Image (cartoon, rainbow, N blue to C red):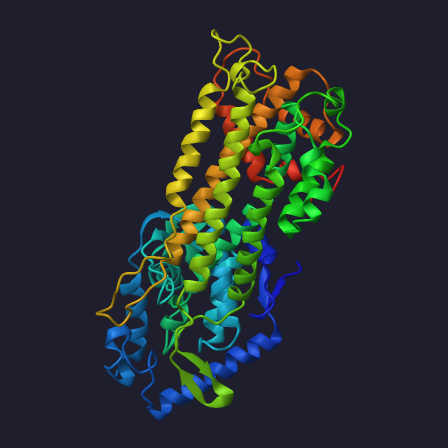
Amino acid sequence: MNKMLIDGNTLTLEHVWDVAHNKTQIALTEESRNKVIKCRTYVDKIIAEGRIVYGLTTGFGKFSTITIAPEDIAELQENLILSHATGVGNFFSIPEARAIMLLRICVLAKGYSGIRLSTLETLIEMLNKDVIPCIPEKGSVGASGDLAPLSHLALVLLGKGEAFYQGEEISGEEAMKRAGITPVKLVAKEGLALNNGTQVMTAVGALAYIRAINLCKTADIAHSISLDAYLGTTDAFNPLIHQVRPHAGQLASADNILRLIEGSKLRASHKGCANVQDPYSMRCGGQVHGAVREALAYVKRILDVEINSATDNPLIFPDEDKVISGGNFHGEPVAIALDTLGIAVSEIANISERRMEQLFNPAQSRGLKAFLAPRPGIDSGFMIAQLTAAALVSENKVLAHPASVDSIPTSALQEDHVSMGTISAVKARTIIDNCEHVISIELMAGCQALDDRKIPSSEPIEAVKAEIRSFVPYIDKDRIIYPDMRKMKEFVASFKPIEVVSKFLTLN
């Protein structure tokens, strides 16, 4: 089996997704192995010379002024992991935990952390053999990085804590035993090399970004379906309009929507009608979806750098004969980016719910039945599904409040400004979950409205509708629809609408 080679410098967000979701196997490059060995040799030299160096021969945080005797250094490293594993709440999903492991491996592979090659290779073996630490979501303030959650990761490396092994939650000791992996006994610097850095917030953010960029494409599909079902005009998506305000995201979304509707018989059936201008939610998809894309471009730039960065402390530079304490563990760049991601993506659901209002409100819907109910009054149709969408949109507005504007001093004022970046990451992921639900409801509603129009739309739109109809039937009278909503959420989250459309055109 070909393995993805890790060197600490060339990881991409797509690589993170593949390892997280597709369980792609990894291995170190030979160059990376040599760098790790060289750095570790330098650390051993420092210890042998009895130098006083933070994190190697001293305590941590406020205890940095306390020198540790050589015979106590190994205990110090293990105590760091044991005492710092204080996370609470739900565990990160297995894909998220896999991504966290990958990013931690990537940091260590750069050769600035001082870990032994054998310890790093044990961590890689865990990932490849599907021993995935149970990492609680809550407990990180985002500086000194993600101390608590990364300590839960390291616990399993020591044969402690809890882990998922082949999807089953068991003790870390048992997981390592079943996988045939020998737990590690830490030596100088290794504890700090394992739990100091931004890998939790960055990993969760990386997976959220991939979902968000695909959600933008799916939102363009949903918008196209709703616009055509609404008997809307495509004039607002004319390239002439967007070329004189040439934001790249706006150009991309407007072009998607226009191409998706091209060839629609339903669109052709009402050309020249009196409806020359549509409400904003139907008219401004290019501008709104495009603005989200612009924000995501910034997020990607930050994440691309962060996933290939050394973010622990101190950092070790063997060639320069230096061990330098700094602040690369501070999550502020990632925190602000992921707050931005959450704020931006929330608008996908916000405008989606407003498009639903145009389809559901008989005063606005251009001849569609109220709430698309087959027998209005007897049937409620999508009346309460819209309430669900509204509730999710409202929840997103609360979640969109940035975590990065907050800070609370910790560690006796040694760590007196923190990023709250992991909170930003979890909020962003939750917002995306909510948005996928909302877009799912819009897709269901749009297909119902198209069927009610009884005139075919374009080929790509009809293909998406046919795919949806294979597992969500037309609502010909009220029925329990939450199972349909769940199936639709899975459909959207799997990027399947994009796959269906790809047979006809490539979305920007």
